[in-house]
Image (cartoon, rainbow over all chains, first blue to last red; front, side, top):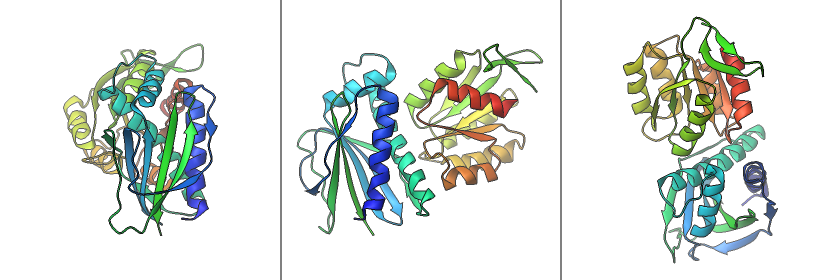
Length: 154
Length: 140
């Protein structure tokens, strides 16, 4: 996976979370993860096609998702209901949209699918061919960790 | 049809000929619909309808026409995406004022939307002042 495809997602996530959360957002160290390892509880999945194919997963605990969506709606949410789901999906959409805009400025063509949310504990993501590894970018949003999990294939 | 501006330089949702500026919001995100509705309603725009996909949005446009002044339209949506919706609305009403509301910044899809007749675009995440400023420039 080429770093030039990854960096725009890292920058977009960092910038957008900083812009909209008004918290102290910190970037963690990137690491590789084998697909099949468990997710945290709320996963927003966006498919990517174009110069590469693959997907991005925004992975966080339900507690983090509720805190972030409460802040963005300026309202205290008690559970991960419809408006919370819509908010977290839009957040993933905004990060992906900004990253794709950055990639297009570099002459790379990408398009992406509307987000899908998967909820549940002990959640695993598998890739049938076993050819892909996921690169994880942990971001401390100030309201909990959001892991951006990217698996692209050229 | 001109739009009135407040002393702060941002548009007020009133027509210079009288009456409120009527807006239709088409976006698959309830969160964005809520944000845009709050921004517009805070300035006296009248939100005449909201839809979460292009197909519903097109039907809604036709049902409220000609009592509609502006549409904000998302690009990435299920059912019928924003670019197709834009074309279909403009087929029904070549004078439709459509502003794309997108996370895509200056990406190719936005350029395509402008070619297809969108009057401009606003970028998500939405900032109230930036949205009003942009909408004011477009409607001037």
